[in-house]
Amino acid sequence: MASRRKFLQSSAAGLAGLATAPLAAAALPPASPSVVKPIVISTWDAGVNANKGAWKVLGSGGYALDAVETGVMVTEAEQGCCVGLGGNPDRDGYVTLDACIMDEKFNCGGVAGLERIKHPISVARRVMERTPHVLIVGEGAQQFAVAQGFSLEPQHLSPDAKKAYEQWLKTSQYKPVVNIENSKSRSTGPVGGPQNHDTIAMLALDAQGRLSGSCTTSGMAFKMRGRVGDSPLIGSGLFVDPAVGAAAATGQGEDVVRIAGAHTVVELMRQGRTPQQACKEAIERIAAIKGAKAKDIQVAFIALDKNGRTGSYALQTGFNYAVSTTDTPRLLDSEFLLK
Ligand code: GLY
Image 1 (spheres, rainbow, N blue to C red):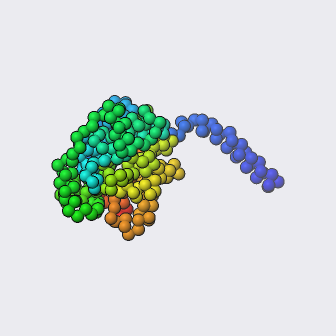
Image 2 (cartoon, rainbow, N blue to C red):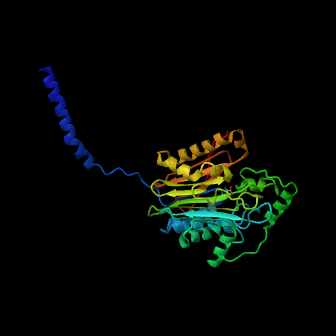
């Protein structure tokens, strides 16, 4: 009798659950995280001006792909130490530029070792949109650019790059200066000393929820002629997956390529990490590979997921990045691993 009463009670509870659960669910709105958009994130303090350029597109409802091209063109035109034609040369005295771009449909394009062209990011976009290829290098990239109507700029070094190169020639030793990309450390750093690299990388989510990314650099200063870093390589310097998010890298390219950095960050987000956790885990992977040598380099990642959540993590202190959700960018110091 007792067991029959128990059965009836539990059956009634079960039926009540069955009866009420669908009603309760139907009464609730579908769970959907609020999406922050439009939003743009980019590397280093150069990202402040670059984001302002990107915001002119995003703020008026424009396409993320146009925003990430327009944004980094600002940095290319500023001609600092590490991006565009004002960048430091390779060890033979030539400025060679690397760039890539990717949209929300897995379309992508890049150029590497491109000389005498002011806006490699725009050539990368033409590779994406007007060729069946994803990467064109060296002389072929320049021929393609000229055929597409880009002007061939004079072959010369900027005054700062010339000074740095002449100084470097005295020893011809490659000794990276960590965080040289940050204009604060650039201005207080060793004038004419060995300059490292780096890169502006930008990720954007537009008002329609479309993700895109871009990446452009003059690469590692005084590199071997023909050296290519991570920045023009889809999956290393940049990766975009509309189902998950986007990521980009800055810093010592060889160590980003070693772990297919940007793709790794996106895959970690796919597995459930936040953008911040994903960047951190990728940096920890590089640190584990490098061991004691990790302290001699800088690498950093930025990430943006499809809901507009951002993340950033660096190997060491000094990396900053800019985030915009309005026309006023915020410059933020990144968290870092080596304390
Ligand atoms: N991250 C830029 C380079 O290593 O060339």
